[in-house]
Length: 325
Ligand SMILES: Cc1cc2nc3c(=O)[nH]c(=O)nc-3n(C[C@H](O)[C@H](O)[C@H](O)COP(=O)(O)O)c2cc1C
Image (cartoon, rainbow, N blue to C red):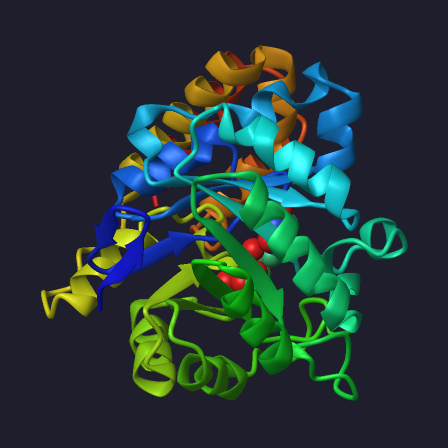
């Protein structure tokens, strides 16, 4: 499975899903170290970018190690999107991705994110405006449609291709579904047969076997993993091994998990300072230790931890408790 984006040939096309509040520079580096091939920023508001310059600093931050890397924009007015895309291109991403899938009411009530799926003609305008504004590849991330009654995905995928979009990612749910129910992989398969640009499949890949199953089912050019990567960057090395027909790596030991938490925390501190890093790290720590034996007490402490020293202390206690079991 090879995925072409710009001058990059990715073998295999294995992507980390953009997730607001989760996949900033720190977590992306960890995913990349585990073999993830394609990274995106969290979504960035086109209007916010034009009006409020500095608020986006950590959202926009990326390094050479993350390439190929895309900055993701959301918005619904072609003038703003085009200006924002020009501004983003100056930062040197390898591509710019447009978000047409976010189901959050705050976003859709402004006709942004997933709400655009109700307006195929407007989508064409936006695609053309952004493709015309930048010289790097433009990609789009779509859902199936607004709800089951408005299955606009095939039409919008064709419009994207016609407008010069380079790659389409599809999360096989409607906006109305949010994250409930099952992702519809048939919709991904249908678009893959319809367009000749690369298609990445997304939705419910939570294991190497699921990644393989999506590729078999959809013949897509790449797969994208979201929620299953939270607290589990190792999923990328497992999927890589599966796709290459190699034995799956052993599950991470408790020592590897605690070392990953500390590494993640340190990267976040470098990105945003210890206080903000500690607040963000609370949810990550809980994801990392989920399902570990004797982790209930550690979880209670980690959700209030406010420094690296505190987290290290809790993790030492957790390791000691596990050794004595
Ligand atoms: C907390 C969270 C934040 C998300 N933020 C974004 C985002 O900024 N941009 C985007 O295109 N999708 C976003 N998504 C959707 C994911 O990229 C992905 O499409 C979705 O989670 C389905 O994939 P999965 O089943 O592997 O989780 C977000 C999802 C979650 C759970």
